[in-house]
Image 1 (cartoon, rainbow, N blue to C red):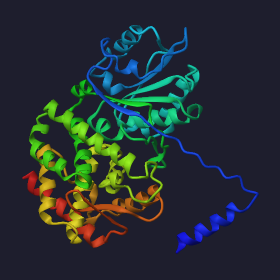
Image 2 (image 1 turned 135 degrees about the vertical axis):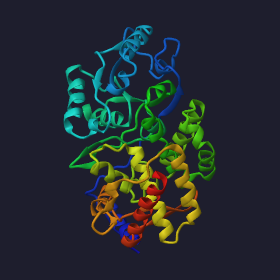
Image 3 (image 1 turned 120 degrees about the horizontal axis):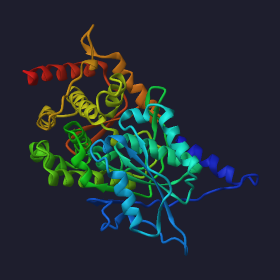
Image 4 (image 1 turned 180 degrees about the vertical axis):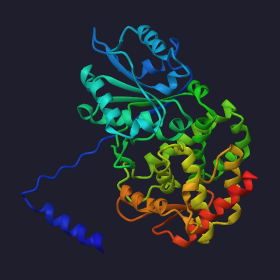
Length: 406
């Protein structure tokens, strides 16, 4: 009924001659490209992205690089320079900017201002390209700077972690944390392209290798049962750091994420439902409460099993599904409980974690909408969460963590 009232109002507005009606659409397209050694001089994948410049012109490139990457690959800036010199139409505008990676890159305006100053001081304009190389936090922050610098600078992402290659780096969002809240500042601004270079995976420690797998489990649980069964079958192989298996995981996971963004009719998240944030309401709060000592993917793993345990308590999900998912996370080496989840006084959910529900609602806007599952690949949206069921869920996770610890 409310829709009819709005429609009638809109019809009346259109009859008003004092209104100029504005209606246009923009077609977004970008490719996610998979390769190895993107900066090897024989690899033209990056070069092929650029339109040929006018006669005598140059394609102007600038780079922001995650410091953590250079800790394992110190000569990367020199490799980039050598690559650019091998293509006469490319120009490196300025030396690459090196930024400390991890969530600290997103936790204040200071780091982003460093990137904005880099853009300003070196005249990186809307026809130049700003290329970010690093983990998800660096890509989020640099993408935000590119989106607001000159109202939008052409931006290319080269993710270097499992999580950024299969999830955060392939979508349309960017941002930084502010007011102590995850991604409070940010925009929806698709990149020109995403280049997933599998060679960078060799630089990861075990935590970063493992962390991104939780996002694959997440998207499998809500969208693709066969993918979950494959993950279940290959959990131990992934834990042994089999590169070929991880490359398949990243490709399939990235495809599921971008297919959702492009096909569900809400790429800029104007509605209240965000299935891709399954398990994230508690994860975001847990990250904040631990001062980001816990990695995003580690927090998501805990958030997923918490929501699965809740779904079992509410009668939405068979307990055998919970146990299977829990077992996969254990085989991968995840820790599935954190002391900050629990309120030591009454042995229920920590009220500070519970407050994450309202923060999650405020970030989405509109009605609280939490995605759960009723079976692998079958989603259910709920608009409230029973406190007693949450208390029982967190106690179950505590109990199971004690069993596995022994």
